[in-house]
Length: 107
Image 1 (spheres, one colour):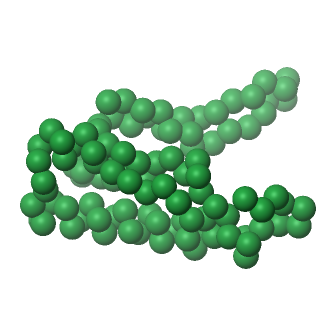
Image 2 (cartoon, rainbow, N blue to C red):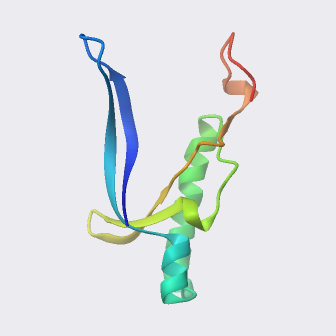
């Protein structure tokens, strides 16, 4: 499976809008477990630790994911590291009130 994940967006001087996407090549955790079966602890633990680290970074920014599931954890190879997880689909994320700016809508 190949995905493109938004990394940046903006507007050019002529008013054209753009989105820069990261290209991911791999499978989500659900697809991988269905195809290969349950992971041994030696494989599962590093993935879990990295996913928790990603969520910790989001929480430090006042963002709560609210839809974490195997389909939203994408495993790819990055920097020669196999099973590098990317936490995707923050579409249902909630920004905590601490991070809200004046005039922002509360979800």
